[in-house]
Image 1: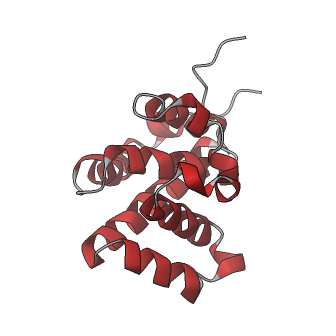
Image 2 (image 1 turned 90 degrees about the horizontal axis):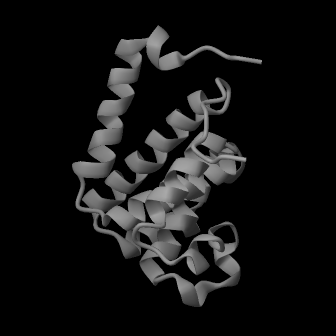
Amino acid sequence: MSRLNWIDIAPEGAKALFGVHHYATKGTSLPEELVHLIFLRVSQINGCAHCIDLHTRDLLKTMAVDKVVLVPVWREVPHLFTDQYRAALDWAEEVTNLSATHASDEAYAAAAAAFGAKDLVDLTIVIAAMNAFNRLGAPFRLSVAAKP
């Protein structure tokens, strides 16, 4: 079943969201690889096929496929990710699952230890931006680039 194209129907809303996305990808001092890692992990949690497809492709430009395929189980392979990346992944999961985690003090402390104040706020904006896009991409079933 075909669903609405939210970008065409609400171009001003799309423009606003893409502005946040631009800030998340170009306006912070966070490493590009980290941003795409967080975009991918958040999208995996939310089950947005379009965003998983897109951000896996983005991440593969800078990260080995061996690591990318293990992103959903990053806790089981801590040696593959730096302390900062693990803190960011944990924070992304906490913020994405906010109703269950309430952004725990433990995750906050780890994220605050791994990032300066501005970078932690920017990381949280990255997480929030992808959550917003997932909440449009999944319900409206945006297409994927993957072919059968």
